[in-house]
Length: 256
View 1 (cartoon, rainbow, N blue to C red):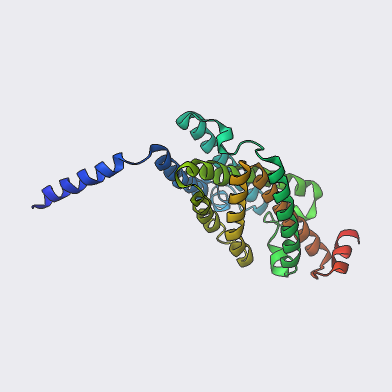
View 2: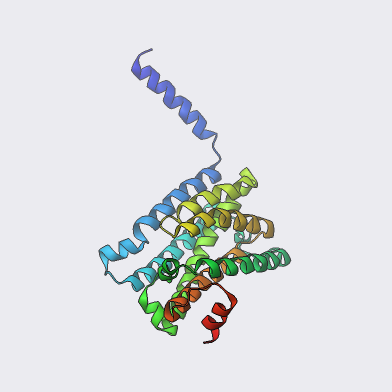
């Protein structure tokens, strides 16, 4: 068999396998790569630094709004225009309210305790808010900054715990929880080590919650509240220089 005949045979074999692929599943996997590419290249703080200014605060605002838009608008258009399906089938609903609220309350309580403990590290407290000094100096700026994070978290959660999770569920069942967890974990690269490690379990827990409640709304609000607590506690610790984790430290931090 000469080389040309061999290549034709291989191309024919690959083409035959490609024709067997499920269009929707293939589209979702490719769109994950495409949207993530746009996110990393065009919606990052580094892109803002290189093309606009070196302002830390505005680079984060740009990141949150641009990334939040990419991860919500593009999947939304895919669902409505390409798949011609209902958004409620992708978690755009309150679903099982009882399960969603109870699990969110339990997880939030656990995370608040965890945040309180890990924020006792001066290095951790100095890392947040990622918007820098401006966020720590003004309550108004802090509120606007957190609202930008709310938009970012909507896109993040709809993308991973809505579009990807529910889009792959029919084909992979509960394995879709693991599939969405892996890139979720990888995209935490650069965060403090303890947050990077915790993102493995957070990705699994939030994925299970979304699948069981049939909604990504709870993970969206929950994820935002956790970030709000991280930023808020870090600001208070830095401004008051209180890094203990005991009850007296908590009282001093909140009331003195």
